[in-house]
Image 1 (cartoon, rainbow, N blue to C red):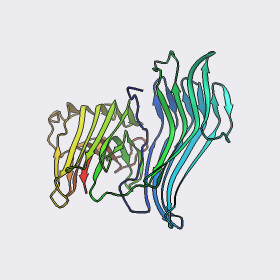
Image 2: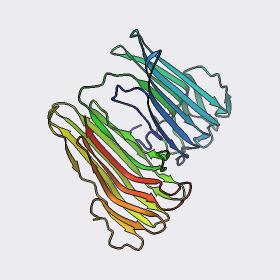
Image 3: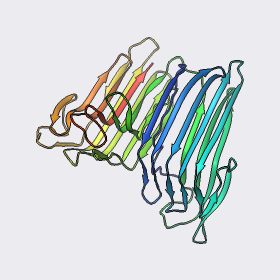
Length: 370
């Protein structure tokens, strides 16, 4: 599809590390791509493992009940797993698996034991609409290491339709992918996302939404969402996250996270044109890291605080009664990088399902070089 309408939802990943025992998680309460897909909770987990088998990269994806293409495809639950392993003896292998509950395609029930890469034609109202691949599995070997991916559903529109989807449009539900790669001596780090809510103990309650990491050995990556929210507290509009890095002749990271608009607690805090943009670069392995911050707001309004505008200075912290402490354009620097959070909120009371001292972040860009 030429235009990406919605990127990976609830993305998580572990990359550019030789450390074992790492776990990264992400979750969202629901899916909503108007006219295309609605669904329940989504969670993903990525792990780096070292055990008696050797070294393993493992990824899982779980999706609650879905309704796709206005009921043409439905399911009660879907989950996938992919792994890539190098044994202690140096042998490379990969695995794929999927489980499903209550899947129907064009009114036909699909059994839980469906074979890998089963392909069905989807007809609606007696007319062809799309091709659906169920339990899509793939493995490739690159430089002696296995890369594996599993997709619960892969829909490709192949006919004109009334849903507004162009021929060739693709919809992937429940994807897991895993690969082991050599860690470069010097590499780029960082990520960007739109929204995240975290409890006082560090447990992530929602998000990070529209998350995308930096390709550590060079390249570009993109994610976008039509909207995002923490129910009862924050709503955010269209978000795009672009990350890129280069490693030759020098190492550089760029992360740009933009949100069209956001509203907190029914408009108590409102902002438009939210842009979190950072970079980090290093000319040579032992030279210092240079960072930049070109982040900005188009507009900011805070009830009862007219002095807070789109020109608010970095690290401006205020108390908003009924909400908590709010830091605008929060900047954090280290010897190897920079992190910017455009709106950083610490709750002073229970709001929705978030208790006191929970942290809500809007518009995050983090760039680094190692």
